[in-house]
Image (spheres, rainbow, N blue to C red):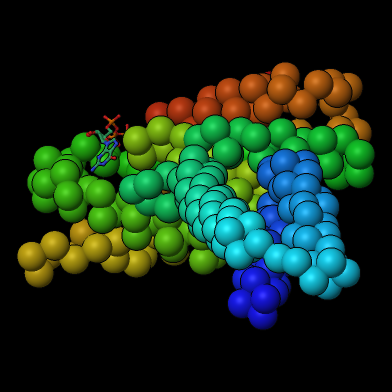
Length: 274
Ligand SMILES: Nc1nc2c(ncn2[C@@H]2O[C@H](COP(=O)(O)OP(=O)(O)OP(=O)(O)O)[C@@H](O)[C@H]2O)c(=O)[nH]1
């Protein structure tokens, strides 16, 4: 009889462990909250099925070892299944996290990816509309980058892009967005920035990039310059309230200003004006 009691008690403990695994998923994973909650509740209610035979056994002093073993086997299988589900969910969440991070970051440079740049820029525009404080768009493009690739090779060009990104990210505020929107084209979004402030930031970046070595290839120091175009969205002066429209126009105007900077000799900053 004692061995049967032992098996039943062990079955109860294993089942409680299985329920606790489901409860852990319930508290940790928002995506699987409903299903794990139902599972934890079901497993807890089923524990009653393990207690009932114990009570009956005490009262009748009769027991079935086969039933006790059967209970233990079922509880062990439930625990095994729950631990596998817990592992699987942890793996899924980790992969989701990696996927999420990858889609938001440009794989070569670690700048913000193009889609994420536009998503975040729209959020900044919404914020600007609420606060009535301007937001600045800067288009930054490396000058004669083709020559860098042609002279030092494509891998060296890649290193230049990486070094430029790291440098700019270090210079900008945490709230600013530095997004790679084309091969050697970057869109910088500066929240809460007037035209004067945006111009200062652009000039500071431009001058420092021109005076510092981008990369060293086979002992050769590679220098680059950049051209920058600026466009400002000021909610007080501009009646537009649709973030997408504002973004498209800000992007286009910054690009036009960049074109002006290129045609005016490169290694310079120009602002969009109508
Ligand atoms: N290494 C490298 N080069 C790239 C990448 N994406 C684009 N490019 C290169 O960037 C160069 C862009 O050339 P162009 O559009 O002619 O511009 P540019 O030579 O910079 O001249 P301007 O912009 O007019 O000053 C091309 O040679 C592309 O191959 C990349 O991911 N890695």
